Length: 237
Image (cartoon, rainbow, N blue to C red):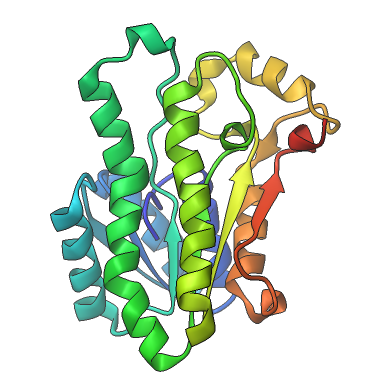
């Protein structure tokens, strides 16, 4: 699991470990990663942390190789790591653009390129991409972030078509406004964004993690190429 040291990633790691999975968490913050690992192990689960600054093909393939070396085959890949700068298009620099697409699109692409073929050979595997509700509709200030996640939505469907016939299920979860460490600086803006949805409130990391865990298990065995909105109903209105 990428981006597993906090927020949605941390909650998902805990949820998958509770279901019996051996979880390999990647991230940039070793201290936070080890805290998640310790929490899982204390509860009787299995977990390891691998430091990774995902930014290009080489870093993605390195993480895949180190994960196989540590844990053996990879049956479930959760592409959760992402960055989400907000702001006007005319203030976006080329460096901003390249950084967002490198983390949000390029690294998931090459993790799948590295891991999915082995899943297909075994005839089983699960890939879950974490996208966003703003990949589904236009919102001022979200052009860069939303477009990167919209690319991941299309990739979810393309990979489902490519690897699904070989037993690999590829789906996505699309969160709405969610209370996490990362979204805390948004303050009241988060509440206002959530107020536009039928639920009228932000979600929790655990609520997103439950959806990811559903797609990771055989309870969703007939689900391929789906984007599951977990956004309080925002894309419905």
